[in-house]
Length: 436
Ligand code: UDX
Image (cartoon, rainbow, N blue to C red; front, side):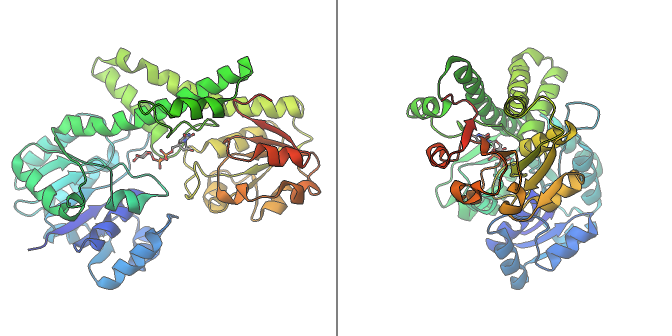
């Protein structure tokens, strides 16, 4: 008999997981407390932008296997319940806010059928799974709990869910592992590595992976700072060290650093949790990783001031990119938008362009100016900032926009534009970590 699944929390992770599990042939019921989100999903529309997921969702809705509701009792027939709610940074500190995870488990507890398995996918501080399992043992002893962290990247969500580079399950007994193996049977059949861990290790895998990625990015941004001081070129340095397979060439793109809904808050929550556990010193280096990351934003602002003036009130700056990375409309903790807002706060007129992120950016920063087309954004600009590496920006012909701007100055905050091309068209071209 095929398992029936529920997905609790239908944001980025949950909506992706629900549609992907349906595409594997399972009956999936998605539950979320937000009626607008549920209505959109139920109509086959995605409340956010993710390449490929819109088509998959529409296709799966037609099969009749996938549905969405705000009614938690709808999970009553499911055998496996995936908890996919957010764990944002808490308002008063570095720790993760676990309110949504706890209330999701509480909300489904009365409807859990005999032998069902609750599977946490949200990124949580180590120890959360064990405490939720104990809570379930009291409220719903007929059910068990496991943890199955997800590693999906925005922009590659479907690919990362259906063909992940590994599956990690934290379980307290064999039965939970057997159930999860049944869920992921077709993915395991592709040769996907399967890692069984205990609950705390599974939780730690996720934050350790994100900490490592954040460290790689801040490492290369620290090298960029040294290159600037010493007259070197960080892009050549990254290429050269990346050939060493022990180092690898991925995640060595120097620039304005990492943002988004995961890396920044995950390293902070990890530090907070380590401190609670008495292991504060072990993760002190993450404080530096965070500081290097935030400093990259400041370094761009410093170059802007040195190019224009300390006083920015008379200047118009065009910002290309608002999202934290391309192929996403996510502006959470976006370095690009942060820089744009800081420049505006310093008195500059800032016009932001982004292929997908204007509306989410406007919600966060309603006072910034926005332009739907690149040429409108750059018109009359004293300086251009390239802050999110959308392919549209690499397609810009610098000579074609030369006549539109006031000054031909560009700062490439992502080290992705063709410096020679821009210089040939008479532009003054700056890039982080590259001296001329
Ligand atoms: C990340 C993890 O990669 C993923 O495994 C996890 O499940 C969720 O968090 P995501 O937030 O989608 O995924 O973004 P990611 O692709 O990791 O990029 C994070 C940030 O780092 C972006 O702002 C990106 O621009 C920046 N970055 C990435 C760099 O500045 N340099 C790089 O070399 C790579």
